[in-house]
Length: 633
Ligand code: COA
Ligand code: AMP
Image 1: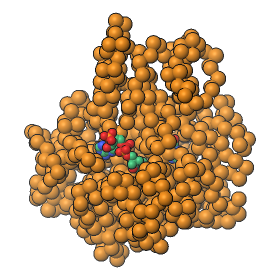
Image 2: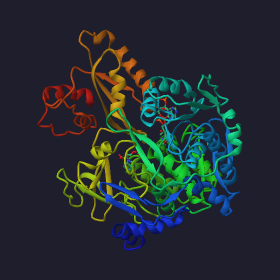
Image 3: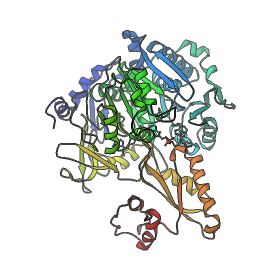
Image 4: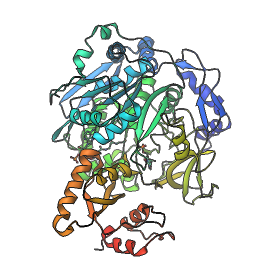
């Protein structure tokens, strides 16, 4: 166990959080430097840097241009699916963002207004986020793989003044039309945006309606020509809302502030990811997920590093060497992606021959997060790359790692299956159902003692009550992560999976509730349940169990109904839900109070033998389901 820089930093961060984060805050340019670091006067609500003011876009772009990095590349755009490569220096990125920010201001968007961004992985998506930050507007990026029901839920909660979108995204083998999903999402929403700005991509032009404006026209206006200067915002003002999945169909609006976010992300680049100004980081994710927000857009730019926006897949665009070509071509020192991407590469190229074609001498570290890093994938990646592979555990809620091997501070020994130790700022504990701390090695609920460090969510958008009831009420004084696991004698954390019904499919977090709502909308469905079962490639896959209405002839119509249900989830929730397997069953197992026993079904499907809850209403229902959930060979 460490006795060095990590241990010192960790102890300091918990002993005196104000001193620790006050020091880190010096790496950010403030308009009014904060005189107070932590406002802990109204627990369980905490605010970091309460009297500081700044602008996040200024810190991400302007200060680097002024500070000598104008000609350094801020962002490489590499899109094998369109055959495009483009690099933007900091000066060029700033010019694009100033212009777009000017156009947004000209359209009446002001500080505190929400702007929804529904875009593929194109440079304009990153510019859009930064342009909002520049004028103090709050962006809410919706992942392009989501369909109308998810888009609509986000529109009605965020109530955006304006939406920035594109005509299409490009998935291997098909062009995905974004505009029909967006139009349908708006049609279903109570709230309507004033304008929808559409980036027309040559692969598919979108038909334009009355409220739609062509992106090219939008940024050719006089307001765009005038550009926009940075607007001063409070450190505690929201920078963005990013919706994430809970167990219900209503997504949670994770609210991120400006000050704590900038401080924490800048700190994480040096101390966790070991990336310095001028170096290049390649994060293969999507701007629609938190990993994309933090480590494609904000953290590298807040650092004065170079980021890479990659529109492609780990395999098939064109082959399993794609990531390594990028590392080589742009001299990236660090890569960050999800384990499932490496499982995809391993499946396609088990010997790792394609990576051998590239010079990776400048590449230092691979970081993996988003789902559990299984030891097989860890060993395969380590052996093939010959570089450290660092698992890190975090959530949309925290915005940056809770547990990691902080290689920038001190590289600790790696233990396969563990994302290593708690990151400075996070007092991670494993609790039993009474809220008592469990001894080392004993599995329980992973919780974090309040206050959470800067950069984590201070609350949910417009919903303090749900913030408290979802996260803080189980164990007063603690944030409930929703993950279960244990901590070993050396302080290494083992994250074994969600204790709730949240799904994690290919590193994508999805809600059982959303998929169930789509299924329940089918006229034949009386009742349904969705569970996430283990999958060697995607980590988990959803399975649906459906009870059909009385009078339906399952023998005659069952197969058709199942196909319609699969199609329905795809068109309502999105292709990313990856639902393939639907089983029609006679009944669902429930407790006497009517709660469906999803966890018990999930464990049976994964081949375990869980204890049957004493509160089960009718144990024979579960018995009859066993061969369906886990067929014996
Ligand atoms: N827009 C529209 N559709 C999308 C999409 C987007 N942005 N992203 C994914 N989809 C579609 C896919 O095309 C696929 O459709 P299909 O059913 O017609 O094949 C479906 O959603 C499922 O996507 P995905 O789960 O990504 O599976 P995949 O087989 O296409 O790719 C991986 C699997 C592992 C290659 C891919 O998930 C990946 O690279 N993941 C790791 C990186 C990552 O993004 N992690 C997120 C958090 S760090
Ligand atoms: P998201 O909010 O989409 O980032 O998903 C967060 C969830 O993904 C966590 O609550 C975990 O269940 C899972 N997760 C993320 N990273 C890891 C990791 N390194 N190890 C295990 N689980 C992880």
